Length: 166
Image (cartoon, rainbow, N blue to C red):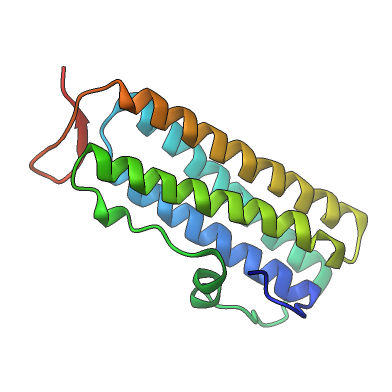
């Protein structure tokens, strides 16, 4: 459920913390997956999340200067949830973790779409709309990767990483 009564600054702070969670989620997935096509996509998504966080910080700084951050990563986890990349034990658990990432992205998209009215200027509202579109796109990319993964033989190597068996 979306938190009620957020200020514009808190909307930015929650978005920044959410993008931090997404970055860490993809970072964890990249470290646990050695399937080349999937790893390439996950690395790109990780980079996207880093860029989103950087742009949100720039918007926040331009509007609120150095005001203290009012939302923690724990707060963001309560809103957006968390994906446990350590739960990957086999192909099926990898697919389930990817479904968790899809839910995370879809909820982030929902957040940005529904909260953009709180933005104090047009540029920030447009960026929130862009982030909503990006979240939906990321979810679609993950769905495509799950479908591609279903056709592969995957095992877990000695380092606990999902690898494709040839």
